[in-house]
Amino acid sequence: MDIELFDYSPIVGRPPVRWPGDARVAFYAGLNIEHFHVDRPSASFNEATAKLVPDPVNYGWRDYGARVGIWRLIDVLDRQGIRASALLNSEAGERYPQIVAAGRERGWAWLAHGKSNSIPQAGLAENEERALLAEVFDSIEKTTGQRPRGWLAPGLTETFATPRLLAELGAGYVLDWTNDDQPYPLNVPGLLSVPYTLELSDMQLFHLKSHTGADYVQIVKDQFDQLYADSAAGGRVMALSLHPFVAGQPFRLKYVEAALEYIVGHPGVWVTTSDEIAAHALSPGR
Image (cartoon, rainbow, N blue to C red; front, side, top):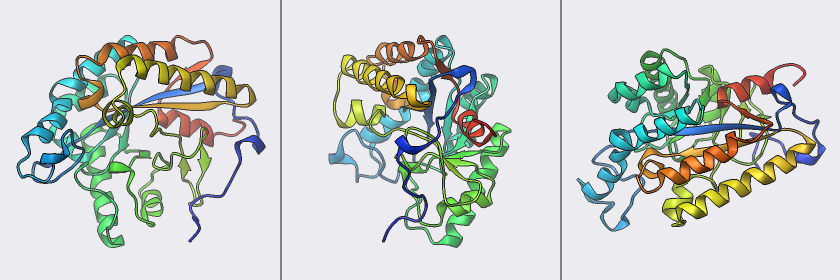
């Protein structure tokens, strides 16, 4: 079957996107704040033990993010003047109030990131998914004081009903479909796709592909430089995905900060959140 959620739209045939202040690139940092179940497999450091219950090797690796890694990343984001776009599992919001408090103090944008990264969206019946999504959105609104406007699915998993159900709950945009450098409307009234990143994810570069810190900095620079050049024809979006149990490891932190410093130190960069990018994309005369 062909996809019905969005239409084909070549970037070369669109009216140019204009960002505030005539910026060329809109940049946001997607900070993944996740909770994992000790009796379910999820992202793993060592696949050999991933099916064991309990699995101290992989659970401990993931849990390091909420206990230690995120606090390093918060310091880095503060130094670089970046407000996070917090991709929040609702269970993380309920279980880690200190992290939520830190984000509220800093004016983060809060996006719904499912209930737990141990619970994918794929395979749910529509009535089950509707109830789960309502629970997630209500929980995040309660813990953060903000109704989520954006959505990133756990593991970027969806059902065919997910976008429509999200729109019913008042969501305005999703990050799951990483197929563009600009926001674009989905074929669901009121719902946008906002660019996210797979290739530049710390999970992809550091964990799955085993790139060094120096490699990471160069890849991020190369991505930014090309988007900056492309933006001569209209604004572009650059997203950087950060997982505290990966990017927050001590030996990686200086490289993550160097990459961020390179981006925000350029003129013509709108350092913003995914919420603000979506809002601007919907504004008249953008």
